[in-house]
Image (cartoon, rainbow, N blue to C red):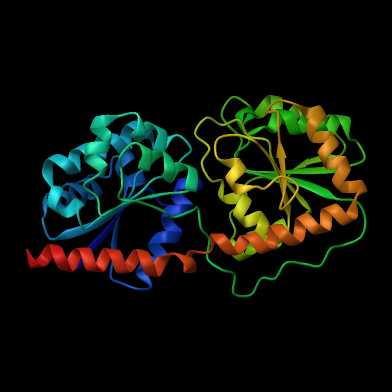
Length: 344
């Protein structure tokens, strides 16, 4: 079996590239696989472009498709449908983002393309339900997974006040403005930000940071996964009051659970599937309410019993998001499909 992974990879760090890199690494531990990096193609790398074209027209290859972007993904699926439908039947599509399943469910042509894949993997039960109801039956679930840590273990609860952290792209639509206003309302609580700052937002963001004595910007974190867990474990609460249109399964929620944090997130897209309110985290009802967020944080700070219960449940739920739980089934399907194709 000749297996090729098509997608964008680090060093362009982001949710899509990290998910692709993790899955590629897991597959490579079990089978021979090559990758074609779409990030290089976007930069004009002709050699990588030629490799992509050459691979797509071959009938012997099987693919793992980790293409992001709604329009780009549809065009790519259409292209494969036209030039290499046979390989699609032994290939899988990794759907990323919170609007992707809706895009497919409302588009008959798109559905026709993706039905030719061996399996379409979505991130949540809700996404799977949407596609099943639209008549796409070759669908299964592969969340935004992480490898189970080898050495890292979450710290025991420390004394003192609770520390809050935001660990994502610094953008208003990710809820950064809500957190900054919450920090103004809660001067007794500390807040830290990690991540690259969105173009056009740096001056406003840094000005707000300078005016909040309880807020610090830590820059972009580029360490390994285990180093990321160690860094996150210095905090107690993950804040993600996102209203980002295409938010899917934010990997930082999974990482925060592994590190022993309690997530506070907005009830946006599929977040209610990721966080059970007052069971393993807090689900915010409103997307633009610093008042609501401040009340939830203060409640956790004053009710240690509640905080510890949510923390314990949060760490336990991290077990749902380990790659090791899914990769063997995925590989069995790929290998069986490739063998059947080659026998035709």
